Length: 467
Image 1 (cartoon, helix red, strand yellow):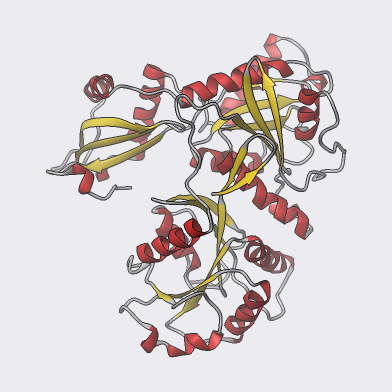
Image 2: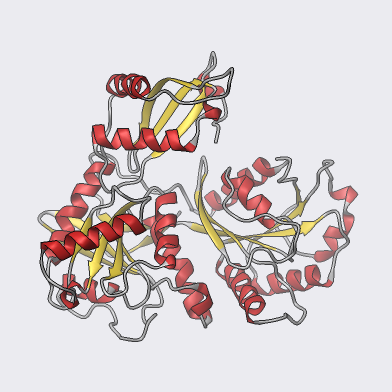
């Protein structure tokens, strides 16, 4: 992550690596293979990916945001959706720190390939040329026409994401390139760290993020307007409360992509994703009048995927009915709508009347301490034994997975690795059960928990983790 200096603190901004190319060249397959899970839809139908999809890739040396884009086409498109897809893809390329330009090695080069190469040359960004679908181990001599594109830093990479050939070499090269440019791993607080707790204000446009920041600061530090999307970029402000330093990150609102009408707002959406990766705790602002939308669920899902701390801030509560009974009803509504974050604390506020604003900081400090919590290996393994005794993981007719032992390897976020036999057979419902039991036993309120399952052997650390 690139370090940006302010007057007193350092901010670590994750790099953006965009996967571009014409439709149906295997961009989504590469995206999914790199992450080790299916996040983007894969299809033989050209143009399946209509939106940019962003996820955090955690490498050995560098963490970065990987962006899967819709296919770049230069012919006339058939409608507004296709046109918006092109704008998103071009924007991702223009804002990326590194571009992966994908070429289908099973087909001849097309006009779109050459037009994309010309576009990338004009942007003067670092580019890795990637020959995809190289199932038989293609090399440059098997596809010499790739050099006619006259773009790319170094030799082309030839991969088969579907068969997992050459992908790790590509990812290693990406990390090496970004490390040379001073990007690094996602910042983690040490137990004795005096660095500020980083709070990102996130939510849809006009939910009241900037008004909330201004209410906290007691001055008009951020632009406030009734026009959705006024905040175009992330803004960092340092503040101290009760002896604890905080870094406030006010981000642009994230609205539905179909409603994003100009390039600046698309840029703001991408920077908001960077803020999720950058912060310790996301303060997700919901409008009490509008409730939870599909877009809120999508962004909260991204926060969950990055194991970020999260607090749900219900703003504009002054416009609703007062009293504990109404709050209880709204809490029940939230738990129904956001079922995947039952551990996220909820705070009802009014930026206009400054109601409950001071409570944000002790609540955020508590979530931060929960993210720093360590569980001893002996205590964790006693817990695992009891949890499996109460509910044994299911398996197949002749094979049953069994967790032998586990350990917590990191904090911020809490990261557990479990070793055992046939752990690839553990159903997601049992993983969810185990997470709930861990939270019941040890807390971790307000923070995501990262849990890995590895099949133990003579040397369990030598085995590749199973998804």
